[in-house]
Length: 569
Image (cartoon, rainbow, N blue to C red; front, top):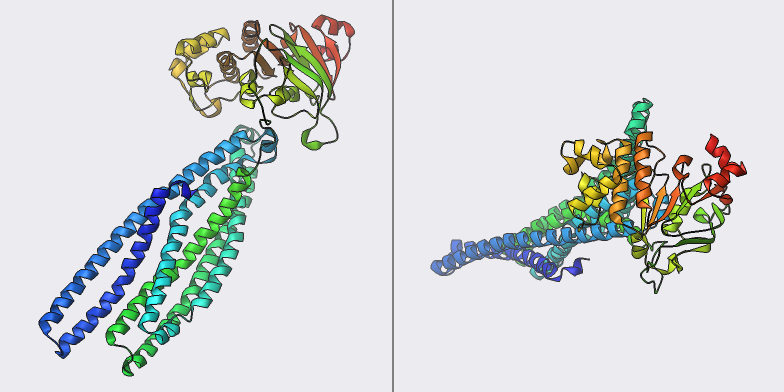
């Protein structure tokens, strides 16, 4: 992804190499300074010329130091910008993919796991660009060119000084493998920790209602302690292996000093050469010590990148078929033809041989005991899952042959648990339709009977909704959901037990609103309260995934079967 930013990437790499080059020029200039001072002290040549040369060298050292600092600043800035740009793009791609993955995927994967990947793993990859990849280039130039310069000064001394290199390379390889495993386990553990916290905060009312704080604390402590152990393990690996990488360099530096002294006494090299050599050694100490940090950053990025691409490489179970076309709404007739369905390939079908038809201005009610498959019908209508048998059509167009965007734009859904987003009431009613005017928002609220309570709120339609609508009652949240459905203005409206958890007064308001909403729309009403669908044009009664009765309210009551028993309960 960094290749998507070629200019900044090129600047970062060039500045990195330049910084390393200027840093490696310093030892040569320092060595020349020492030799020049020796010349001045020995009076073997014109002192004035030597002093001028000394001033020139001092100027070169100053220039090299300043340029190194500037190049380091440029490479750090550009590398951070590229890293954060990669992180932004990766985060957006990840979020988009999670949005497009099917209901089945979200049924299987915990929310905490997805949040951890989208936050911590993306951040690890973004940070690794400067702390890992660019830093690795800098280290390679310093070590590679530095070694060549050392060898050009004195090959024997270089071999003595760098005999530790194979040991360091081996330790770095071992550290990388160990860190990759440790980082993977830590990220998995942090995902579980996030999931426990998310569940606890989402269900805080249940926790308090059952006085289960200590139970939840114990559960959180168990996972948190496990995360701490894995964190300690990664720290131990980094500290231990970095120490083992630097120990040989200290020993070999001592040996190099002894060898250098012998070489000077033998007349093979000058004191300036030794000074140059020692400064080179000091410069190489730093990248070798930072090798552990680079290995750690790259290991974490590799682990986090792998976890991210596990999601990014997934193909949604439900996606547009090749050649999918836009849904053309002529009337809005919804038809199920011998539909069968089971979750996750289970042999036991949730629905079996379901057939019905409902058109504009008509309402079909669906009732049945818990687990009979009522809500599954709603999910299949909007193609959140694909049928296992039969087919579903809207105006004779198979829902699998049209684009998901056009299909779901044609079906409005109001669910049992109303969900409101952070923002104002107006923004929630207008949801994802910016062209809707405040007047249209107010009209929608009046239609469903929500205008009265909204105007009694401190800021009316501009009232900020607390998390999950905490400052509104369940009935008020549901009325806003109905107003949202009015604004969506879809030809097909599906209500999935939308009045199951509201009070009688709110239900009365909704019944009046439904009559207006369904005047010209195709209505599919899945009911928990049977009074909700008494006026439906037709009612289907489900039991164990099959239609066992169908008819109007009066006809079903006359049958004195399952519907009549459910109604009398």
